[in-house]
Image 1 (cartoon, rainbow, N blue to C red):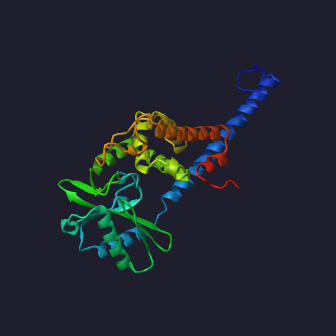
Image 2 (image 1 turned 30 degrees about the horizontal axis):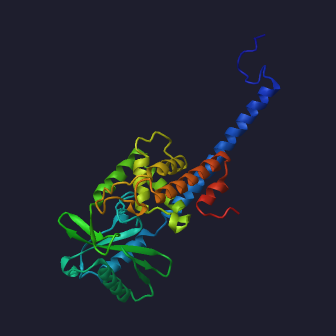
Image 3 (image 1 turned 120 degrees about the vertical axis):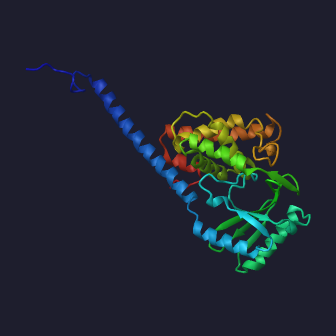
Length: 313
């Protein structure tokens, strides 16, 4: 009769060892189940974020362009330029759908506030369908009856650069959007295409915070470019989100130079290096990172959902 070879892992195991093996097997099953649930939650959130009707947006943008056709030199629609062809160089206004590049005769030395008011009035008259037209400091927002929001930004060319309204004063700021877009695109590729989804989810979490605690969208994206330099971890949003907030906690303490050229720093609104506003921002980011780690440690989908302001019932 053959000897008791090593085929059966339960041969000659003590009851304690057998119990530990069973517990480990159950733990692995629970971990895999939680990871699947968390991945599903994050994918659902991303699907919701990406669910805008691009055909209808294009149709509505075309109508807006038609209304302003006499004043337009060209338009730039970053929305349709690819998943990372974004226009986040405008003080975090990542939802801008189009830059309306005006011809020079339209400007006549106008300040941005005057031009925004004039364009807004023209769009309101031209639409005439009850669409709500709001004039902001940088952009014009159109709220349609079906709930869709479209934002457009006036700009004009000066040499090989664009100028857009400055968030610092009622004047124009030069921008070089390709520089920032290139950096974001390259870092996204280095991270297996998962940087942009991670940033979208980070912004969703930021959106739940009181307004006084939120970072701008542009700032979040600039932090992400730095946070994931030489990143060697798993290319999943579940793994990268805590890393973003942990790294951002440290990065936020120092000003980040604005690669787009609009201003000296993307985060000038937080004040001087290591100042109180930056310390407060770091505390908020640290708290979010800790809540994520705790949610994963407890394998709690509800705790993760709460980070996005979702009901847990």
